[in-house]
Length: 169
Image 1 (cartoon, one colour):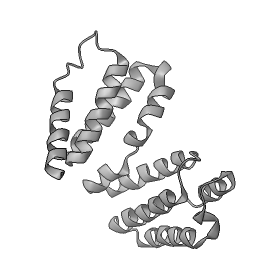
Image 2 (tube, helix red, strand yellow):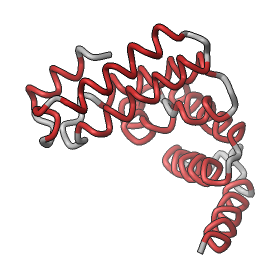
Image 3 (cartoon, rainbow, N blue to C red):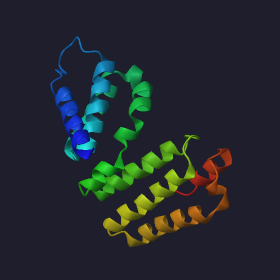
């Protein structure tokens, strides 16, 4: 039930907030897990500024452990580039920028089906519209619509389709 889930997320977030991140005995991986967990709980609770704070902490970890950047990026890719947070707080320019980065990073993942990309293009249309960039909004809506009508897109993503999707953004 919704109330129970909200309580669970709140308790989870409280547990993360009680961690002493300045403790020198706390390992990088423990910090990373806590930031990821805190980000997810904050997102579910609509605490968008906390999401931004956790994403910033993840960026700091990358500076502190430059040899672990690739690993950290793989673990946090979709959190750090989460356009939904900036959409929710009304920073549409930042949402657009992150949505484009997210799209270009995910288009390399052959396990994601094409409907994800159609949704991303549609979101880009929405963000441009809200930022009063009407021509760009229409362009992204049209791209999403064109993809939805394309018979190649109705199948699971393959290498050829991914090349095609890369050209759409």
